[in-house]
Image 1 (cartoon, rainbow, N blue to C red):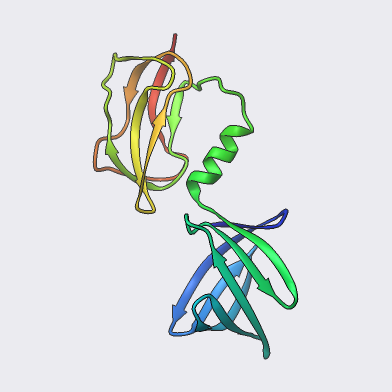
Image 2 (cartoon, rainbow, N blue to C red):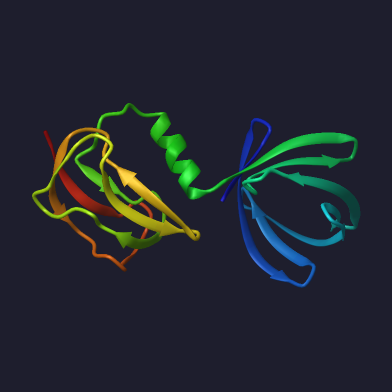
Length: 168
């Protein structure tokens, strides 16, 4: 997952967790830390023999935090696969591509269309469940379903082509 701290975005991966000992990779660099919750929202962190205390205040959606540590305050945001996809889409124009591609690994929950169906801008073409959240993918312009390459219940990979479209 990506984590945004201020203007910096870092790729963070949890490698292992055993009790209070956590091994993570941050932008490819591995860290082994000992983290203990002292009280609700206050943590003690040991890394390379150095001790840090951090206070986390969580937003309602559990994706944004205010972190206070070492007399500094940081805004931290968890950027999940859906948020990355939406950010990527925001950086492009609104024209519909001739295919729908899974932006993340997941499971096909629903395909409310069939080959030959004509869709209008905003219609849902497929629903994917990823990270315990269902994501409905809508078309950005009028089109026709040309080919469906997956079925309900299928596991899909990131960047896998799911549906081919014919743009109207």
